[in-house]
Amino acid sequence: MAGESRKITSNVVANYFGQGWSALMAIAFLPIYVATLGFESYGLIGFFAVLQSVLSVFDLGITPTLTREVARQGNGGRTKQSLRDLIRSCEIFGCASNIFLALIVWGLSDRLASEWITSTQLETESVVLAITLMGVVIAVRLQEGVYRGVLIGLERQPHLNAANALMATIRYAGAVGVLHYGHADIVSFFVWQVLVSLTSLVLFAILAYRFLPSAERWPRFSSNTLASVWRFSAGMAVVAGLSIMMANLDKLILSAVLELAEFGRYALAAVAASTLYLFVVPITQGFYPSMVGMHACGNRAGLIRLHHASSQLVTAVTGSIAIVLMLFSMPVLYVWSGDMALAGETSHFLSILAAAALANCLGHIGHNIQLVAGTPLSLAVTGVCAVLLTLFALPSAVAYGVTEATYAWLGITALQASIVLFFAHRGCMRGEGFRWLAWDATIPLTGALTIAWLFSLYAPQPETGRLLQASFLCITTFASFMAAVWLSPELRTRAKSIINRGDTP
Image (tube, rainbow, N blue to C red):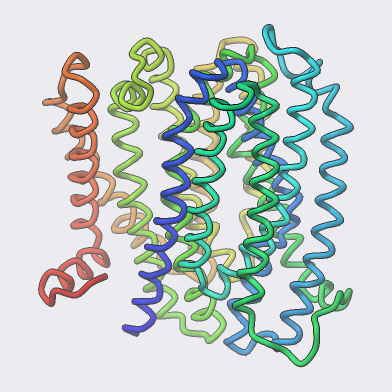
């Protein structure tokens, strides 16, 4: 049990390091991109982020399937040879689908540049070339998902995240160098992204094969091996596609409705809110292999314990950050960008988007349980909510404006998360729903909100400067987090153990 706890802790810490550093790189250099390229070009970068998320459905469920199959290999799952054949088959199949994807984006680039994106400053030829390069970057990064899935399943997350941190530094800091010393245009930005993505693909492939268990012969393509996982993979692909649509449909709609510069401002608030996802994924990825092993061995008590521990950690971390983003949206944007006017224009978006992101993070807990059990029942729910979002958000954006469309997205996102969590606690977590609602979500969130509200009564004025504002925000977030931890039974027990025995987590 102690060994398992140390392994999970190591995975979570490594995930936070790698993904946290990647987020820091993206966030730290974003104001430089805006200042160097302008809001129209940054709007195009925001469109790339949306396109990448939407087209990640072309992963076809390969990444989560490989993670699950690799994690099961040591618990009565596949043989070493069968596992290697599965990985090689996914490599070849994924490569074909990703090349096809890049060709589709290239074929549609003219139409997207002229009919979807509204630009008043950028030349159409530059936009077309930028979109074509986007397709190449997306295809290469999807292929990289094969090796990411293998490394997560092997619980080699420290190595995975060290590579993540390295490539994120090269990707974002290097882009600043290219724009500063080379050509300060959007095409140069995406050329650099292509080069870094190809390098990253090679690095992750080397790491994955280094840690895979050896087998009797070289791996080979096997249609039978692919057929053995197609049901789970197809289910994951559809669920992932609909979930991605739910997370990005607002931005996809608004990229067509708004001018590129205005969409850039909305995208800026969306990036700030999306940092929450970078805090939930490391936790669920860190717990996932152990939870799959518990489920495979029929250890329901152990699975329940890990479920509540991971849920409370997700709530404490993402809840405290989301509450600060909602209550202090203007100071957050001011500290980040240094532009008070920009903060005033986008702060109301950030408050709404942070609430929606928190709902998505909590819903991700239910989705993770269904992945562990291999029964993605959230499929129908996500599909219905995506249809509702399309029906309500687009008319709202056209008829009433961006704010109303954002509120529609928040309401439907909260509805989706509630229903997904309900179904998750009717399956292998049957009987744990009320305990989750009370002790894993409501009570910790209430404590964090109370502390943040008390701090808001003494918030410094904007003229006090960015450093004082940043210090205040950090202290408020930490205090809210500690309140949530102390009100979470599993986390409180662990914290007491560390304090009393002087253990390291």
